[in-house]
Length: 243
Image 1: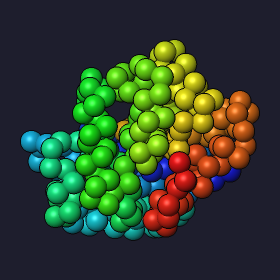
Image 2: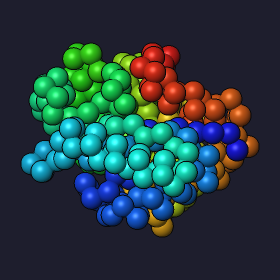
Image 3: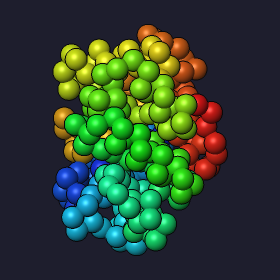
Image 4: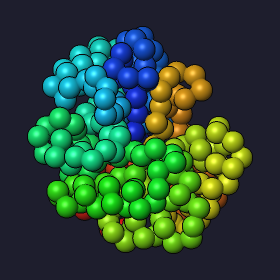
């Protein structure tokens, strides 16, 4: 398997509903290394009306975790970010440093309620763009009002939004319907990133090797490389990704 970069993970210990302790984080990172993941963006949840861990604290904990990785010879480079739950004023919060972009780039990983209306999602994406951010829609397969009608995902992509799907959805870990939907999105070329959205060391671990092999075999080797390496690398470099 080729190397990959994971732009969506909940591996930082004790900050959200992801890894609950350092040992869990280290086990997840060992699994990631076994799956040829070389870079991971840590994206703790950032939600309204929550006591979100501050960007400064994320940076501090990331450095501590990186030191542990280096000590144990786990060859992964960590980067800081957030999975941002959209709310009115989110762009202003980012401008003020209350949330994090992906690895210090202009790309932002944004999520919505699975039941959010399409116009609300579209307007939220537009609001972030007006402040100079490049939105990446987290696990697009979950938004029923985006995926329900032909052309809505294409509309968002034409606006300049990027689509991320979870490896677990592709592999059927969340049911046949989700597997079928993500397969259709991949076949139509409507995905820019495949990420783990890893939360633990068991059911939602950072296993991506089988997913990468399936994409390569079913679709195209170059497409798999774009999803798992080329586009994520452009995020790390803060380079523009053509829609």
